[in-house]
Amino acid sequence: MSKKLRTRGHRVVLNRSAGGDTGITIMLTIMGLFMFLPMYYVVIQSLKPLDEHFMFPPKFIVINPTLDNFADLFTLMGDSWVPFSRYIFNTVFITICGTIGNLIFASMAAYSLAKLRFPGRNAIFQIIVMSLMFHSTVNQVTHFIILSAFGWIDTYLSIIVPSMATTIGLYLMKQFMETSVPDTVLESARLDGASEFRTYLTIAMPMVKPAWLTLIIECFKSLWNSGSSIYIHSEELKTFNYAIQQILTGGIARSGAGAAATVVMMIVPIGIFVLSQSQIIETMGSSGMKD
Amino acid sequence: MAQNNNAEISRPVKRSEVSKIRWTWEEMKNNKTAYFMLAPFFLLFIIFTILPVVLSMLLSFTDFNMLQMPPHWMGMSNFTRLFLGDDIFLLACQNTLIFAAVTGPVSYLLSLLIAWFINELPPKIRAVVTLIFYAPSISGQVYLIWKTLFSSDSYGWVNATMIDLGVISEPILWFENADYVMPLCIVVALWTSLGTAFLSFIAGFQTIDRSMYEAAAVDGIKNRWQELWYITLPTMRPQLMFGAVLAITNSFGFGAVVDALCGFPSVDYAAHTIMHHLNDYGGQRYEIGYASAIAVLLFIIMFSSNVIIKKALSKVGE
Image 1: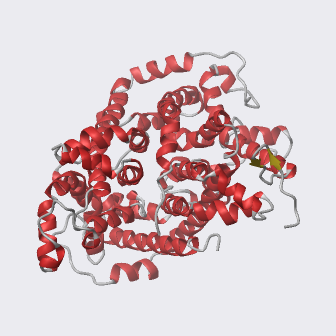
Image 2 (image 1 turned 135 degrees about the horizontal axis):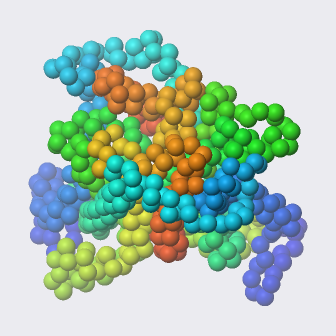
Image 3 (image 1 turned 180 degrees about the horizontal axis):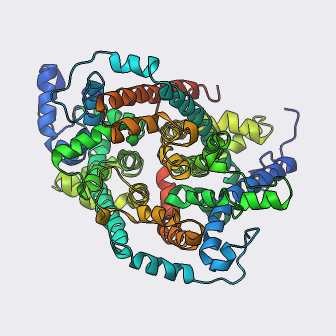
């Protein structure tokens, strides 16, 4: 070995060149700005008073910040045919029901696949992994036929029930249970006479709280962000996202209210992520897929 | 498979004593609870994921249209019509492949690079940077802001800036011009694409023990690129696989982004993908048989790209 090894105390100093550090910082800054500026612009737009929306050239700063747009949002939606609160209720209701259902069903299935040994277990898991490989919209058409056979078209059920069987959360929870719930703990619970279901509920589930949060945010983000759906045509069952799209088609005069609505919508998932980031990253540590 | 598992002490039946079928049956009876716990999820999964796939495959050989009963068996004619009699489908194929071939690999590499770049930052700063990169993918329709930035009048920031700088004299109709639609949609799709795979990579980098790097430095690894290729990536291979599956899946699923930005159908079908073609025939014209044939082809494309990528990834770090 030609190069001399540098050490600091007992630790080996890794080979890091100053040029590499600078290059990485510059690239990270450029990409960071690309990601951040549009988000920032939405917030700025939502705070601009009407005259600043018509300013040329449009500015990345707001001169007289105002909350009028948020107030406008309520008046604008106040005179619409379906009250504003209804759209919000729809989104919240669909999201909560779907997410809770997914959490219960997927965690039960994950426990069974991760910790119980029964014939067919690997085959079932392989099928679930395969389902991650295609985007669900490819199924939309036949999905529609099945939903109409149940008579669920134009009901909340058409969105809520299928979302309970989302596989990504199940996958992540199963992988996490395998690494973080030791078999010995489960075995001693069984020896104490606890039923399998009880072991799942009182021993395994409390040990995988980080995975709950991950599953919740995975399911939450898709439901919360669902817009117009081909399964729903009644106006009073449509989601808030659909309403935002309608506002934004109103052109530049509505762009303040539209931005305000977008900000309202994005605060919730971002807030959840900020609170649960470290647990989510912890879960993702075991997300790997064996070849 | 379960047959390989050791029979536990408490189980009365030993594998060697009975036939394979009988043993499996006993195992199934012993594990009734496992099936009960799996049942609710799996039942819904079968109804809403497996059944639609099977149904698509069957209907793709028929002329089912939800009105005329019973549907007629058409053999392969839906498929021949797709390739020989439907120019827009061929255009959609081309667009889909371009879209997927750009967004898939680029979003994958971006996720990996950024996760790698931020790995050595102090934890607090790393959390903030992670949020900045991840936020667009969870914030739903926030990508509509790109429509404001690239608005076709001079109130759009991009047009205004370019007019101000004298690059152009009148506003460009970004989302109404067939030349710009596709690149713009790709940029926006990339902007929203640092999602679950990105988080998985961040976690992957963090689970690698520092002592491995130190040992490698002793063994003569010269710089961080060698470190990445010889140590980090091979250790992270399971995460790389998972990320690849998600990246491929998503690269075919940006239809909603395109719809919201360009409207449907997009100008001159410039951003028309197979997914749009599927919705057009399935959701609007109710030619379910034909739409199913499109869906089946899309399945085949998605699965084969997954298989190819998995093969390629197993060579990382060799």
